[in-house]
Length: 352
Image (cartoon, rainbow, N blue to C red; front, side, top):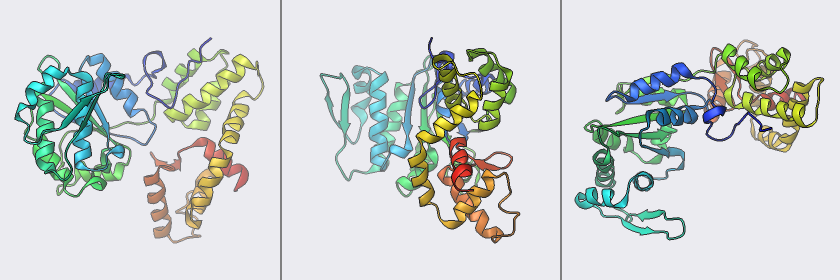
């Protein structure tokens, strides 16, 4: 039997969990001339959801993660390389005749891939305009190109003024859709909701929430080798319906039932094993927190409101929560909570 739960990579086909409403919303947005801003904490499945939508739409798609971009020139280079993966050289070459900054292009005979570079210290404004206009020109009404910029909040750290350069070019383009993904809500809101920002109101804003409890419950029950109501409930209680960790814990539970024939306390055993595997990693993470962050993490693990205990000034606790949310250790839905349930288990066992 094949483990029916998948995590850590793009989730597709039979591994994909519901999200039918969100899929329809994304597909409807892509059927227009508008752009889309999709915000959610890390590991909520943004990339998998976009991949699923693009597959259903049967549209060409370019994806660049801005966390891997070091400069405006690097962004232009990565966009061009992605274009070569989906369009034939003859088609791209035709549209490159008007490039004001010509790249150096070579092919790899082993991988059949294309390597591309620009001369250093070129005018990045012209370079970005040439590359983005190329993407517009290769797009067609029948197969309109979708350009996904993942972790878009990193735009502010790459190069000063890059956001203004991109907006100036993108706002005049037609015949393609941009999707901006982001995991830092406050930073994404500054980019797309503040009037002083170049990208103010640039597209449809959409937040990706956790998968509803009932949908995740049905998903787990349909895939577990033993149809035990308590197993599905226990998994969702521990993970609080977090997509990534629910898949990971369910995968471990499935293996314990299938290969080791465990029947008692199987969810607790799976949770303990996953926590033990990461023991050294969790120890290193914990040592990297300052005293206030440790206090806040401990309070959240115990289900307490760290802002309401009075042990530390409210402003100090708020700064810690903001910092921990930005780095991904804490997420905020209706309330603040620890992102990783296995890290939470470790803290409760060893630090509380």
